[in-house]
Length: 317
Length: 317
Image (cartoon, rainbow over all chains, first blue to last red; front, side, top):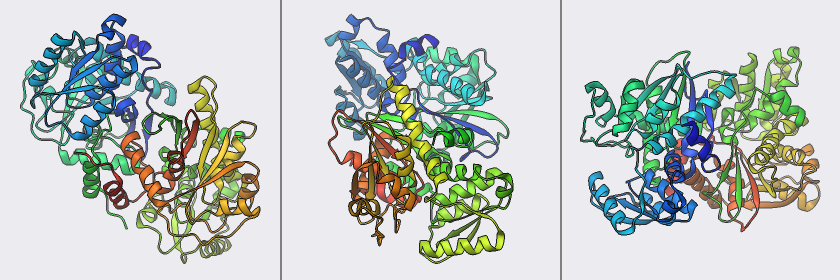
């Protein structure tokens, strides 16, 4: 992770870490604002890091990936930075706003079914034809190390702003497990407890930790569209099982409430997936504790945002 | 301003300065995110600085001010920090959300008419009774120096992040003129052009600059409720006339468009007044330029926000 941070210097943003007095009651919340990262999500870190680890010859063959969301944007973003092509397999039912952004970054989109295996197959076909390099969404050491740099920065920022202080706990949203595996590595040797945040009905990590092995899940409906894996990554699980202290699930209502509270009180926009860790932190009494919360991304359709604000905002006159 | 920055260290937030590639086409925009300041607006700087300039004996007599908006919150915030009382004269038609926040900060509210002179009279009456100290909203050297620290930080942050670079221009929203007078002082001796942003029909500074003397205005209707002065401050005008290069006005539609674009693309929430400078920067072709924009605040009622997002958001599917 430390080496990844070195490599990424100048390629990604050192996003702000904001100590919030507006949201917490008692606890000291440290919000790592990855919604302010390039492409609006931490995924820029892993994709850019994977791209930097390739040789110039490999890079020139172009990037390929499969994703319904922010990783697609991240790979398109990295490809544009290196001036190479990007081919992205996306589901036929991908939100138009995400398709538009990927396209505006200059990537070619191939629509393929609605499930992750269908997209993966499409990516393999593109690779056969084009010879490009597949940049994996989460189950990959370079991706994990890249995502871990968000936590590494947060650790530094907390220490800088508190005269050497450390986090008691860090809450991380979990989809495929790239961000939390990176957080586990970045906090190794520190006393910081790592807590996972998953939507109710999509708790692939919690179930796998309970069982002691990876469990496939049929993700239930949730507004947190980035946190709906069918299975946690293999490498991700191997790392997480050694380090994650507690697993939490949050409901759509808790996620929406956290999203709107963050927007109205702390003036930061996150997508539902990006509010899951905050929902965990706000749902618990953590007096006197110093809690890190990763706000993983901010890409939300304006209609959805207007609806959530209308429904979950505190009344005022 | 430099001395004010020293005094304010540890009392206010060093807010992020974000270089935006999401919003600008051609120009390099540097967004000074004072919406992330304590109480959600730059006003915390001036009020806290004025409070720090008082003797402990003066402070203990309590603070008084008159304001319909963010300055009321700022004075209440400063009073709470010092553990002293705050009395705020607010208009009878103040938005409930602002009244609630001021009250939640522990201040006493006195409702007084609907105009600034009526509020000022009420503040003078409170002072006679309580012996407290009036903290002026904008026409005061300590307030101006405090507000100037936002620009001073931005200058430092741009230099840090660009290897010693400077801003070609800085766009500042203008109400009573505290922020822009501070910006004028903070940029003295630099090549940075200072540009003002006022709502159409509320251009007290533009009219005063054109006339060469302060002109009272009857502010027209605007969604930018923080930018509706009846007259620019005397000291503020004396400073601004020496340094402001260009005055711009923006319509409510331009302000709302900038607010929603910033929210959707850069993930930051501002209030309409806080979007005025951005509306100026987005409304002009400024290729190759490095433009600073002060996002002055983020206190907006959730209903208004939901309405603006619903009305001004780009369509998506």
